[in-house]
Length: 291
Image (cartoon, rainbow, N blue to C red; front, side):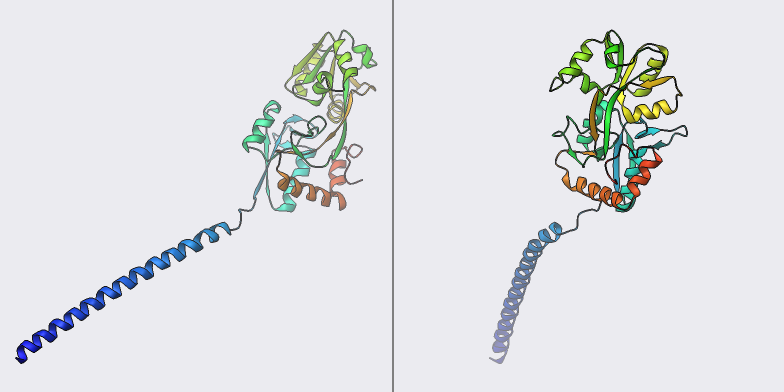
């Protein structure tokens, strides 16, 4: 009898132990499930709240044959007024400046694809106001004609029957071909024997030197730079083709980066750095900031 009782008692204890084990396993699983849900619920906000990656580089797209704003010097280095401004902006923001020479015709593709952060190289605002997000204008510029000093050409009217060169997709080209509010310049261009588009102004001056063209329509800042290195062989006509302003162009809608650059330029203007750089490139009479 005692033996039977002992056996029964042992069986009861085993059942009780088994039930306890099952209960403990279920609670552990529930607890694990609950913790997983809690973790899942907190992971998303943690990821969302992670700080954005800070900018470390600033890539400037520029025409490498557009002195004095941006060009390649005799040592193979990319230099210029605009590149010096960009370098100072980068220094003050802790960015590395990446100088990216581009084909001027491909500038919109480069900007749209994100290959460059901005177009900064004597970039004309006028006529492009709605195509980019701009800084404030920092240079007043004009489009002019350059001719050989002994050409006999004294005014715009003397260009009748002459061949004129202009850079492709440039402001000078727009001034001579844009039909909007531009009747006088269109009428002038209609008198030319030919209006030739060239890829850059070095090519334009080579054509002018060779006598292949009679005049070059171009930015006055670039014209002054070219003439300073060519002696008295060329002159700028007094008649201005058009007036314009330069700004830094960002992809349309990129106001955040534009504001960072604009604020830094304003600081440079206030402390005199902007004008110092302008004087180094003999552009102090053309700039709008820092005066």
